[in-house]
Length: 138
Image 1 (cartoon, rainbow, N blue to C red):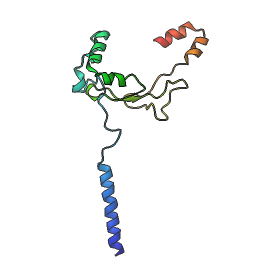
Image 2: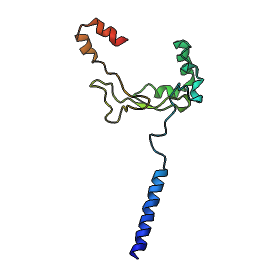
Image 3: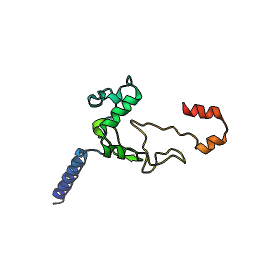
Image 4: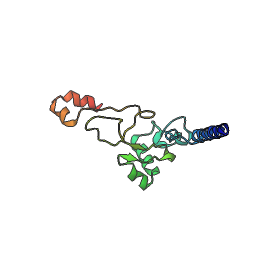
Protein backbone atom coordinates (compact mmCIF):
# COMPACT_ATOMS: atom_id res chain seq x y z
CA UNK A 1 0.00 0.00 0.00
CA UNK A 2 2.85 2.37 0.83
CA UNK A 3 4.37 1.90 -2.59
CA UNK A 4 1.02 2.64 -4.26
CA UNK A 5 0.67 5.85 -2.21
CA UNK A 6 4.26 6.73 -3.06
CA UNK A 7 3.57 6.29 -6.78
CA UNK A 8 0.44 8.43 -6.54
CA UNK A 9 2.39 11.13 -4.70
CA UNK A 10 5.19 11.01 -7.26
CA UNK A 11 2.72 11.21 -10.15
CA UNK A 12 0.92 14.11 -8.45
CA UNK A 13 4.17 16.01 -7.99
CA UNK A 14 5.13 15.31 -11.59
CA UNK A 15 1.76 16.57 -12.80
CA UNK A 16 2.05 19.77 -10.75
CA UNK A 17 5.56 20.40 -12.11
CA UNK A 18 4.36 19.85 -15.70
CA UNK A 19 1.45 22.24 -15.23
CA UNK A 20 3.70 24.90 -13.67
CA UNK A 21 6.21 24.62 -16.51
CA UNK A 22 3.49 24.95 -19.12
CA UNK A 23 2.07 28.18 -17.67
CA UNK A 24 3.06 31.40 -19.47
CA UNK A 25 5.90 33.12 -17.70
CA UNK A 26 5.34 36.64 -16.49
CA UNK A 27 7.95 39.02 -17.82
CA UNK A 28 8.89 36.92 -20.84
CA UNK A 29 6.06 38.12 -23.03
CA UNK A 30 7.32 41.55 -23.95
CA UNK A 31 5.71 44.19 -26.08
CA UNK A 32 7.74 44.69 -29.27
CA UNK A 33 10.00 47.70 -28.88
CA UNK A 34 8.92 50.77 -30.85
CA UNK A 35 10.88 51.42 -34.04
CA UNK A 36 12.63 48.06 -34.04
CA UNK A 37 13.66 47.61 -37.71
CA UNK A 38 13.20 43.83 -37.33
CA UNK A 39 9.56 44.27 -36.30
CA UNK A 40 7.25 44.43 -39.31
CA UNK A 41 4.44 45.95 -37.21
CA UNK A 42 6.39 49.06 -36.18
CA UNK A 43 8.93 49.38 -39.01
CA UNK A 44 6.56 51.38 -41.25
CA UNK A 45 5.59 54.04 -38.73
CA UNK A 46 6.56 57.55 -39.82
CA UNK A 47 7.57 58.44 -36.25
CA UNK A 48 10.23 55.72 -36.49
CA UNK A 49 11.90 57.21 -39.57
CA UNK A 50 15.03 59.19 -38.69
CA UNK A 51 14.90 60.76 -42.18
CA UNK A 52 11.71 62.64 -41.30
CA UNK A 53 11.91 65.97 -39.39
CA UNK A 54 11.28 65.70 -35.65
CA UNK A 55 8.10 67.81 -35.67
CA UNK A 56 6.58 65.52 -38.34
CA UNK A 57 7.56 62.43 -36.35
CA UNK A 58 6.01 63.89 -33.18
CA UNK A 59 2.80 64.80 -35.03
CA UNK A 60 2.59 61.26 -36.43
CA UNK A 61 3.03 59.66 -33.01
CA UNK A 62 0.54 61.99 -31.30
CA UNK A 63 -2.01 61.36 -34.07
CA UNK A 64 -1.71 57.58 -33.57
CA UNK A 65 -2.32 57.74 -29.81
CA UNK A 66 -5.85 57.74 -28.41
CA UNK A 67 -6.63 60.35 -25.75
CA UNK A 68 -6.64 57.81 -22.86
CA UNK A 69 -3.22 56.54 -24.03
CA UNK A 70 -1.83 60.07 -24.11
CA UNK A 71 -3.07 60.68 -20.58
CA UNK A 72 -1.56 57.41 -19.31
CA UNK A 73 1.82 58.23 -20.91
CA UNK A 74 2.40 61.46 -18.98
CA UNK A 75 2.63 59.85 -15.55
CA UNK A 76 5.38 57.91 -13.82
CA UNK A 77 3.75 54.53 -14.50
CA UNK A 78 2.45 54.20 -18.03
CA UNK A 79 0.60 51.35 -19.66
CA UNK A 80 2.03 49.71 -22.76
CA UNK A 81 0.67 50.58 -26.19
CA UNK A 82 1.41 47.29 -27.98
CA UNK A 83 0.01 48.35 -31.36
CA UNK A 84 2.68 51.08 -31.50
CA UNK A 85 5.42 49.06 -29.84
CA UNK A 86 5.51 51.34 -26.80
CA UNK A 87 6.41 49.44 -23.66
CA UNK A 88 4.86 50.23 -20.32
CA UNK A 89 7.07 51.76 -17.69
CA UNK A 90 7.15 52.61 -14.02
CA UNK A 91 9.90 55.14 -13.36
CA UNK A 92 8.68 55.50 -9.76
CA UNK A 93 11.05 58.24 -8.72
CA UNK A 94 12.35 61.62 -9.74
CA UNK A 95 15.83 60.33 -8.85
CA UNK A 96 16.39 63.07 -6.29
CA UNK A 97 18.40 60.65 -4.19
CA UNK A 98 19.94 58.66 -7.05
CA UNK A 99 18.77 56.21 -9.66
CA UNK A 100 17.89 52.83 -8.25
CA UNK A 101 16.41 49.63 -9.55
CA UNK A 102 15.29 48.60 -6.08
CA UNK A 103 11.66 48.72 -5.05
CA UNK A 104 8.46 48.94 -7.04
CA UNK A 105 9.78 51.28 -9.71
CA UNK A 106 12.52 51.32 -12.26
CA UNK A 107 13.87 48.05 -13.59
CA UNK A 108 16.97 48.10 -15.74
CA UNK A 109 17.73 45.47 -18.32
CA UNK A 110 16.53 44.55 -21.77
CA UNK A 111 15.50 47.67 -23.65
CA UNK A 112 16.64 49.95 -20.81
CA UNK A 113 20.01 48.67 -19.58
CA UNK A 114 20.94 51.72 -17.49
CA UNK A 115 20.24 55.36 -16.72
CA UNK A 116 22.32 58.49 -16.41
CA UNK A 117 22.15 60.34 -13.11
CA UNK A 118 23.34 63.93 -13.04
CA UNK A 119 23.98 65.88 -9.84
CA UNK A 120 20.93 67.53 -8.30
CA UNK A 121 20.30 70.90 -9.93
CA UNK A 122 21.08 72.90 -6.79
CA UNK A 123 24.42 71.11 -6.41
CA UNK A 124 25.31 71.71 -10.04
CA UNK A 125 24.39 75.40 -9.73
CA UNK A 126 26.46 75.72 -6.56
CA UNK A 127 29.54 74.68 -8.54
CA UNK A 128 29.35 77.92 -10.60
CA UNK A 129 30.81 75.83 -13.43
CA UNK A 130 29.27 76.97 -16.73
CA UNK A 131 31.14 74.37 -18.78
CA UNK A 132 29.63 71.65 -16.58
CA UNK A 133 26.13 72.83 -17.52
CA UNK A 134 27.09 72.79 -21.19
CA UNK A 135 28.51 69.27 -20.88
CA UNK A 136 25.37 67.98 -19.13
CA UNK A 137 23.29 69.49 -21.93
CA UNK A 138 25.07 67.50 -24.61
